[in-house]
Length: 190
Image: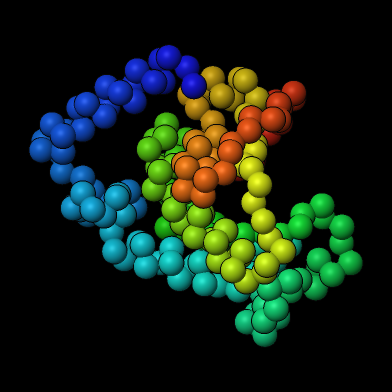
């Protein structure tokens, strides 16, 4: 982590009590006033995300499947039965739709690194639910997907690295920046 980013975090952390008095915290999604214990999300938003955690999905690609198809923790959707994905298991928080889509795009494109701490507990819960359903699923370490240096410069931080850092703390897993992006590929949104 760069010294500039560390200085920004320390400054924001020190100013937070004063800012909370002047500008009471609000939900990241609904912009309703919150209490500190809400950690940035209203009860309604938390409930929507929690419901998404319970939706049945393919254990290999993450696509939503019917409840009948998802009875086994190793269930695969019809597309994955004969495919070699190189993925042993998949855990997901929910679909890329409201309210998760707003949280993710705000984290990625609005330089709101503090949202990583809000999203990480949901990711941790998804992983733990997957591990409980399938004893063969294990987490040894986290390796965030790297950004190309130009995109990292434009965004100011790597959101995957921020999420991994918070998730690693929750699960007691080491985080390794073991990959490097060598080409500036197109953004997923394009």
